[in-house]
Image 1 (cartoon, rainbow, N blue to C red):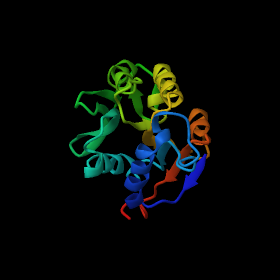
Image 2 (cartoon, rainbow, N blue to C red):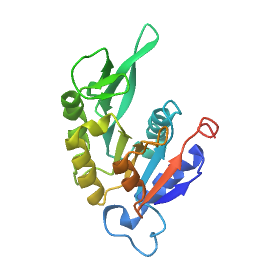
Image 3 (cartoon, one colour):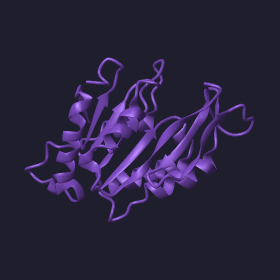
Image 4 (cartoon, helix red, strand yellow):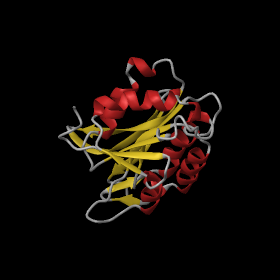
Length: 200
């Protein structure tokens, strides 16, 4: 895998290069072998990963593309965060996680609604010929409570399609092994986003 300190302003250029590369839907060519097919943003919670991804997908450069995938949104009540929803690029939404729910797998103080998450996330990352770019926000601790999601991500990566997304970083020295394996791939670049560089 490749680590990068690329500013957020350079990300659009990077993705355009990936998408215009002859290797974006086939094997790597000698001309484009230095352009990784998969780009992840990583960083600690609340560093701005989702905001950056959503802002980039709204750029003019991407409006002509067929984009599929999902992003996560905070759910607030009275100004306090009570959970997260998952939203696909067609506007369909489902519950990812909530506080105060007693049954189900948990990450921190959140209970993960695996069935609700899978109904939105899995169809959005199914491999389809007509999709130009897949966006996944996030390959993280909450989402990986779904084994179906992990399998779908693996199939998508093996398909050769370009992927842009966010991925979990180690927290308190604890790594997510699946995420570390994805970041180590030769066709992948990972950018560590910090509050100091997210608006560059």
